Image (cartoon, one colour):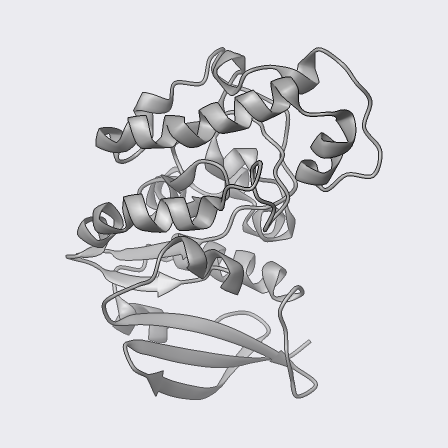
Length: 248
């Protein structure tokens, strides 16, 4: 048994690659590769045919210049581990590169990231660089519904023998609904629940869990997280919500 951790992607990504070519067949759930390529094909086609303004909206950018790289196929790009591709606040606080080999391996195999383009992927899965604003539809196509419909049974099976910690932002619950007992964290500061600013603490928590190679909820409950004080624990259906007060 291990602790499987569900995590969000980030808008911010690095451009660096460690492989020359993205190979989608190497992602987790290879039996559903053809389903993933439906989305990736729609993404490629959109970038080929859309106007610059339409691409700006999809990317969530105000300023963008036309160039060959902008419309390049995802399958012609290089790749790097998802845990290194994403470079937002949570990932900066996780600081994966500075972890021990054991802690990195723990993250590689136990963290499932819900990408808004690639769907559910392991932290070690190599993905291409892309841009896609959270919540944007792809030429009217709802990506979260697609992954929820086509990948949920595979994710159920992946999680079936392990305990689950859900550290995703609420938006990414649309991609997959957990159907077994699981734990979540909430963060409070000055008597207010944090949402956007919770990203840093999710990264810190994941780092601490990886450093301690946590395998189950009991071990998780035994951790002392820096600058966090457990103030409440609520059971709501299959969910156990741990409420932490930020002390800094």
